[in-house]
Image (cartoon, rainbow, N blue to C red):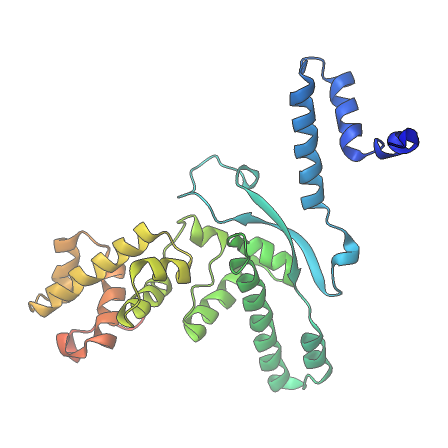
Length: 270
């Protein structure tokens, strides 16, 4: 063994952390624990500061939240969840090409809106399709990436969910700060296509227990309609909110039109 290079190999970030913990944090008397902490700190540093040489032009390094755990509770901060730092495809060559050929006037504004929605969908789906599990962003995160306000991002996502039929989950959606009718539509659509609960859960990025609950509620509404119970009576009978009942009624009308006459449909937008 040539020991001439041992000193060079020890001048590392991890060794610097070990030295700092030994000299400044005297309550840590275990060399093994100090070594483990230093290794963890180095791992976090690598995650939060990836090598810029590996990031393509137009991609943005940004930290999201791993989709894990259940409903958010008051008092939890953004840093209380598992964090994942990724490079996100914010601006790609196709986007620039679209901008180069952007028309003026009303047609240009329409094209710009379409481009913005395209970029927004791409960013959200990139996180959802991460190989180690979905990585989520908030509307605020997406607004910072795309230079838009929270309400603007929220409205764009609503439009996209209607246009694409996809849930396009943000952090707020995942942590049950709102299971919206668009989610129900996606889940029920997959169910009516013959997909089982486990596959629906994977496809829609929801817990299987949640998928099962939504499908049971859908079947309850469908059964009551089959028994000629009026829409107005379903909410008190099931304990479901009227807006939730309306969402399931519309889905029932879509897939089983024979169960609900047109006159009994809830108002559009209800």
